[in-house]
Length: 484
Image (tube, rainbow, N blue to C red; front, side):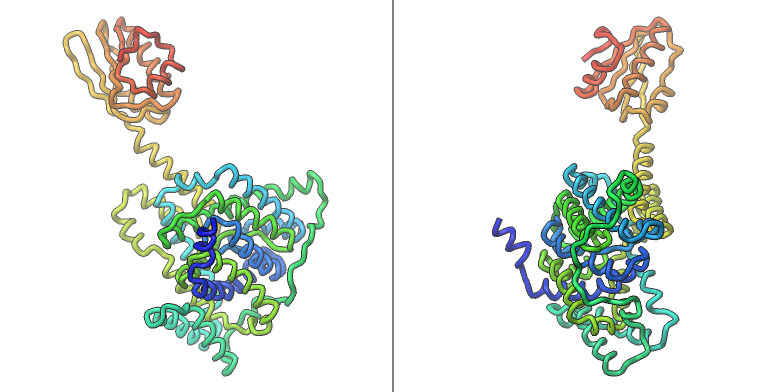
């Protein structure tokens, strides 16, 4: 246990602390922007980012992943805030946490194995495009100085890691260009232009809502949506970070950890949140590997607000926009263009569909869910073909079945049988097939009945163990029909 704590917290502490500092700076404009989307005070998003990051560093299942207030959750709760106010948002966030903990206990992480690679690629690419598009308002139509600052930021973030690896390039860009802004005062927008930052710590509160069934009726649909959206984005982000770091994370623990973080956040005036792929990529690419980086991101965020608030509001937005542009470029799977050309058409379609749905709805969970549904439908269609080979020997006819027999493949199987045969011995050989459900058993019963109506003797043979078991339990056939 001590060895595990040392590994998850104290491996290369300097690198992880520096990475966390970079992420904290990148969290501020995001948290303010998401608060504006949700229709709440910027401090609601900032408090949420601080608390979620700190709590998840202890409770989460994925070291070095960043969780905070997110746009995906903010979009879900906008109608709730508009119609009922921020107090109902806090109550919904607490219930969101309870739902996520429950799902974690029920081992929802196991569902990750049902998300195909085509959906994952689509998810990653949609996120990269969304991150890029979110920066455009901070870049275009502002001033010439904005373009200059953006270009210098891109150059620093691209070139500096090739010269010095121990200091994160985004941190260098932030320090150098912010100092230049303070000295020369170019015409650029700053963090302060996004919203007011109050230099105060969050306090414990109980949401001022009636504790009635009517309140539950109002917040439950939003809490469920927040919980699902948050877990989908968090678990997929964990999987992406797993691949980037060649390591494994506990998805069920991550689900529980997300729930605990959101539950606590609601009692301290914060909105709901989840894992953030952009900030997680910044963290990992800055060399972070431990929970210390996540804790530092949350703790330093609050330090920035309380102690350096007057300085933070003067950070030029083109610097942060440039950093996020580089993140979007690095996040996008550029090999997906070749994948779309070489992969099966159904997989390419699912990847593109996932991207389109996410971009048009800004709902990551919806894009993933629909992508999974289409993948399942395509897969079911692909395996719903049953091949039936026919051999005749004297008065005997042999049908050899090959494929997966279930509700979707029954028509394919039945259409290949000739039910006009008279006075024959018919053997149905299932050595190359597997029976999956009651529909398959019902189809065999129907086939046997139709053959016997034409004075044929019918035998079912070569069922594997599982198929034989389901036939014995559900079929109307008697033992004389069944052969080994």
